[in-house]
Image (cartoon, rainbow, N blue to C red; front, side, top):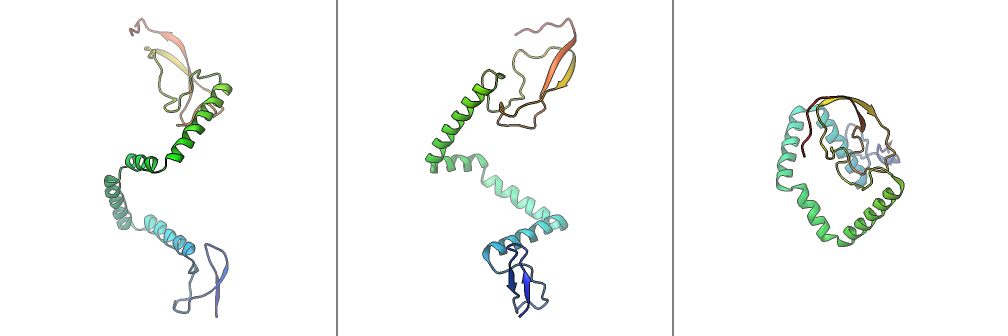
Length: 160
């Protein structure tokens, strides 16, 4: 009987005699069959515009009926131990950031790149990139952080 090396588990396997062309690439193990199907779907998405359009439309419909926020809410309701553990870990991370980072004084979790008050007034600014140690932010790690230095200010006054 002929042998082949499975593309997923990389083990030598006997070929399936029912396959006529002899081009078997995956063994019959469930994990390898899932890998075979995933590879086929990736190839179809890449090469077949009709298939890709149908999959995108299907996914839109699926998402419309299963909003992500509902999934997360249901998951948290079903897994209270996970929620509590996550809260404790978040408190730990916040405390570590407070001890390590001098800026910002109060740790923020979301939207670290949002403009704080007072608002920036009209004027000419120089943008200088700053480095970040990665310890002061959790979300939006790819946000560009800059230092604004006023070079020239107009006569407009900011009223709060």
